[in-house]
Amino acid sequence: MLAQQTAGLPLTVTKGQKILGIRRAILNLERAVFYFIWGSKWEREREPVSSVRGLAIGEPSQVWRNVNHPALPNRLRDLSWMVAHEVLPVRSVMHSRGLLQSATCPRPGCGAPKSVRHLLWECSAAVDQWAIAGSLQFPYLPAGEVLTAQLMLYGVGLSPNSKKDFTRIWLTLAATKDAIWTSRNLLVGRHMQIPPVAMIRMAAATVREAVAAGGGP
Image 1 (cartoon, rainbow, N blue to C red):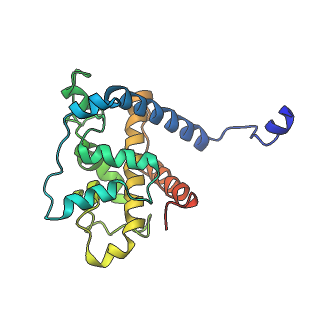
Image 2: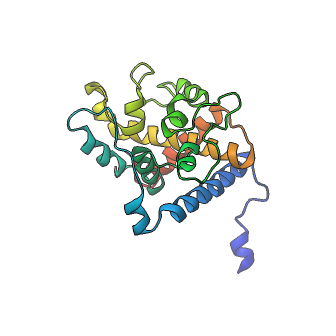
């Protein structure tokens, strides 16, 4: 019986499989930390969250629909919720709660406060990531001049011509944010610098997994 169960296992582990395993381990650790700190109902009620800023009339309700979009796997819904509330456990969030001594971005040469927006949009690593994560890499992602922080963070402000493809766009954006977050965790936890091309592959794999599971178009 054991031989039958192990017969299909690979004899070697590829570099991609190793990175994916590390990615899942780091993600599980980060989620464990998050739910340990904010998991109880009492703590959730006490936890200060930030309102979404700079939205037009009617857009706040759209943000919360996007957070719970049926195309997103549970992991990406969790990530989207934490991004929208600005409670993703980046350094500025952990520092404000007395859990870290410094709020500074861990990227070499950066030095800026590591907020959620900085992590996903303003940091040089994020800038490089979005620069190559255009329509050539992901056909349903808007061209670079259309992609804004509001669209990337919350899924609002999309041009009318692109709204018909919103599900594909939002899933791709969420997967790319997940790849940036994973890259940050590997940098902090294992001192591994993940190049933008590798992050693109991570995001593409996440999209494929979601579509295969029936979450995407």
